[in-house]
Image (cartoon, rainbow, N blue to C red; front, top):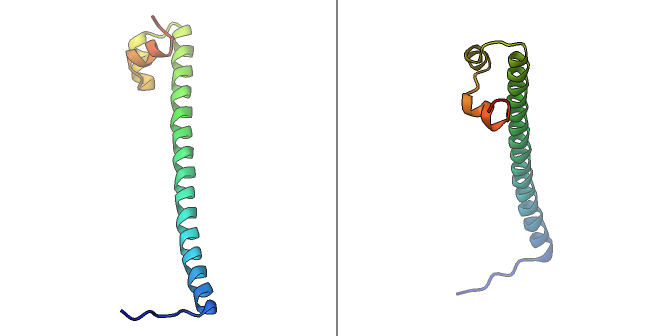
Length: 85
């Protein structure tokens, strides 16, 4: 096999190109992680809002079945959150 020599300038250019491509992929991964974190936060915030609404409705003596229908929460959700026993 014949060895091919690469001149230093050409090697720097190749390395720079590889670095730019990898940096773009890394940023894409970081952006995906950020988006995922934002989505998880949105879902958790929505869940907390539903639990708060359920707590408030129950404190106003709204029937449990109505609260479950209105919030979309389950009986188990309310038990886990300590809203009902």
